[in-house]
Image (cartoon, rainbow, N blue to C red; front, side, top):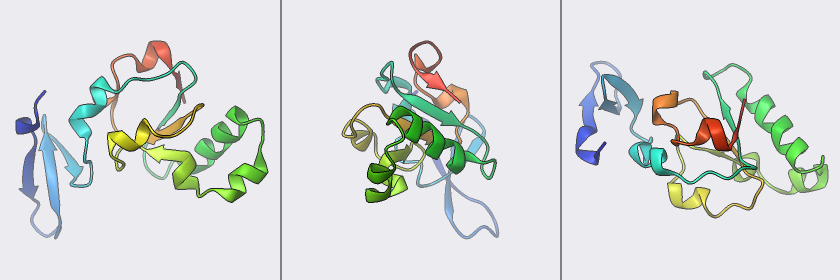
Length: 124
């Protein structure tokens, strides 16, 4: 996949620019959509993959707390968005900067997620 396969589109009445790729429409903030395939995952990474509004944030919080030995003090000292990165929005460079164990959130379909996600990482 190349960046040239991403097409900026206007959806009548929507009022915002959208991206089209493989007949799927994405918000324009999906900045590194095509780079995700080559993202290097770790064995202790957890990915919360779900539809929007399906309890994703609760699940992320539980996963992060379990991976961090229920460290509520640390959880309260950091914003949720700093502890759990939303792959659909953050630049890939930021994903490499957070410490392990890492928890990621996405609403993308599996064909956009890292190649080795099902064999190397944990999926919820």
